[in-house]
Amino acid sequence: EVQLVESGGGLVKPGGSLRLSCAASGFTFSSYSMNWVRQAPGKGLEWVSSISSSSSYIYYADSVKGRFTISRDNAKNSLYLQMNSLRAEDTAVYYCAGGNTVFDYWGQGTLVTVSS
Amino acid sequence: EIVLTQSPATLSLSPGERATLSCRASQSVSSYLAWYQQKPGQAPRLLIYDASNRATGIPARFSGSGSGTDFTLTISSLEPEDFAVYYCQQRSNWPGTFGQGTKLEIK
Image (cartoon, rainbow over the protein chains, first blue to last red):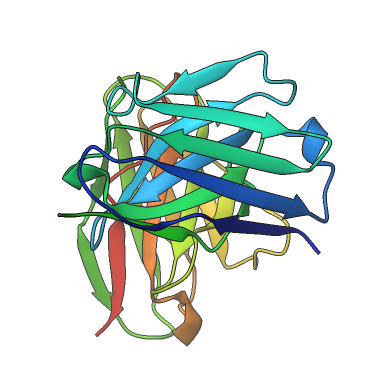
């Protein structure tokens, strides 16, 4: 059974940092591109960042470029998102999603709240 | 950036009825369009990829069509569990943008 389990969310003050993790199991993690997608409360889905299977290709949404860093450790079947200089508008549920072309697999999400 | 516009924003139907959801792209995405279903408190689930291919385990009542800029998700006969929010997503160009969603609610 495919499982993606996010962790690391929580309450952080504006300007602060958080590191999200996503633990994968049940599929060949090292063969898949991985992604972060977020959803602000009551809003739609927003793609945040993607990383190719070997970390050769990395992409960011303009809204997070320069502040967020995606990475992965294929030996640990894990995906990460380092989030710095957080803003109120970054408040959202963050999902990790696996897929080379579309998002086949999704975790249940972790809530990040940026508030003073 | 490619913008996806979904219509209607809300669709009110009864179980057993046919649902037709639309997604229009601001420029051609060829057939590189996917549909996802999201229920309250849950993660999205992939339904359709490459415009018309059902993902693994998706019932046959879900079908997708279209190419270029105009796409349709059809649910042939609504089951109670189908009432949810549906998103389209393109993968033709980075970033892989999503539409704003269509809420399918029980009439």
